[in-house]
Image 1 (cartoon, one colour):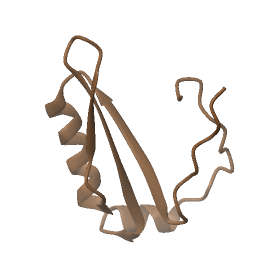
Image 2 (tube, one colour; image 1 turned 90 degrees about the horizontal axis):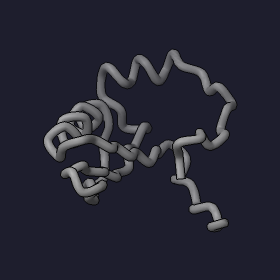
Image 3 (cartoon, helix red, strand yellow; image 1 turned 45 degrees about the horizontal axis):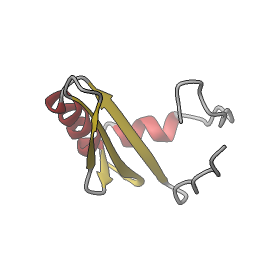
Image 4 (cartoon, rainbow, N blue to C red; image 1 turned 60 degrees about the vertical axis):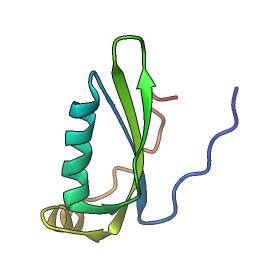
Length: 87
């Protein structure tokens, strides 16, 4: 079993997007960048059929609308368990 990677700093979220094509992954990333400040994305191939995985970090402390209003009204679920499909 691998040791757990350190989590992001308070106010930041690590984002992983897996899509069948690079264009689809980039479109989803662009939507998130319109809502949050983010780091440069890192792209990795997935499988032999052209899939892509993007990784980047978003800064939720510098949120634009509509994310700002959503963050202000949301509450943590206190459910930080790893999902079955996560590494």
